[in-house]
Amino acid sequence: MKHLNVLIAAVCAVLSVGMTDCVTASNSGKKTEDTLPVKKITLKEVSCVDAFSGITVEYVQTPGDAYAEIHASEEILSRVSVTQKGGCLKVGFQSGIGIPGNSGCKVKVYAPEISDFSASSAAIIMSDGLKSSKNVSLKASEAGAVKINSIQTKKELSADVSGGAAVKVEYVECASPGTSSCSASEAGTIAFGEVKSSGNVSLKASEAGAIKIHSIQAKKDLSADVSEGAAVKVEYAECASLGTSSCFASNAGAIAFGEVKSSGNASLKASEAGAVKIHSIQTKKDLLADVSGSAAVKVESAECASLDINSHSAGACTINDVICADEANVKASSSGAVKVVGKCRNAVYNASAGGGIDARALDAEKVTAESSSAGSIRCYAGKEAVVKESDGGSVKTREQLEK
Image (cartoon, rainbow, N blue to C red; front, side, top):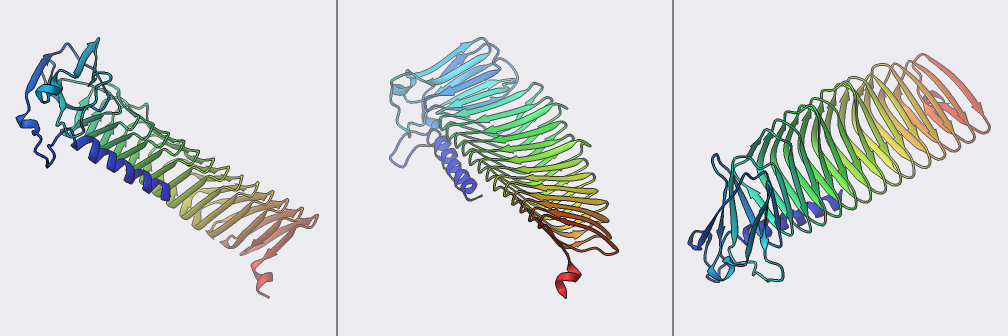
């Protein structure tokens, strides 16, 4: 996860520089926002803000008629472009004009309810928070930044970041039973504090994108899909749905969760050098893990109704301190490797084609173990073991190994 920390640090730099240089004057004596000339523009109903070309836009949610204020020096004031097409307000500097970073320029937009924000090589900030009855969309690209203190919407939230841009929100609450989503690509970063959703939550990162969330509470399912060197990190996640919450990491993507609680199934999948790492997971139904292509899944602590693991094509799966109420079904093939530690009622093991299962520290009452084609199984059976070996396969119980 080192690259995730690097990306987050880089984005913090973007947020601190991109969002403050246009607000305060530098030590060289530039005018501050309070002393700059102000040009007021009357607007029609505004639902969308599109910021571009280095501008800083501050949105203030307020009742009444919409209007904008341009805070800038006399020489810069005429270079600021504020145009409206339908409900969308476009704000930026005129094309081909260079503006110094310490100009102190800012455009303030006052309107009852803006729900669509887009920043391209620009910054949009909102310090007082947003309350909306509509779907809320946050988009940032080309090193742009969107920073909002809090969002409360009766519908869904979508955040889409690319090109080294950043979106940061401290608190998110979505009342819709639909799906709220985050998508980060091309080294873009999304950083959320607390997220509460009455529906599903979808996290997707690719091409070195990064998503970092402190906590998620979803009344439905959570899904995380990471690829191409991207990363998703969540400290705490709780899913109330009886469906399946899932993590899928591929192409060197990395997923790291702290604590996970699920009322339904939990599915962990990694392929093509992807990695899924979870500190602890509690699910009232099944815990499923599928690992292949030199990828890895590691869980430090788990509680589940049943456990199903399939490691193949040089994949590696480690489940520590698992408490499984029913049966553990573990399969390893094609040089796949599995290590399981903990307790279950019964266990079924199958190893083939050079696959290996180390379940010596998994306490099971009844064990069925079948190994073939150079597969290897090491296990423990408290009461009964049914063993089948063929074509060079090997099954050894803990008692046999300790002799």
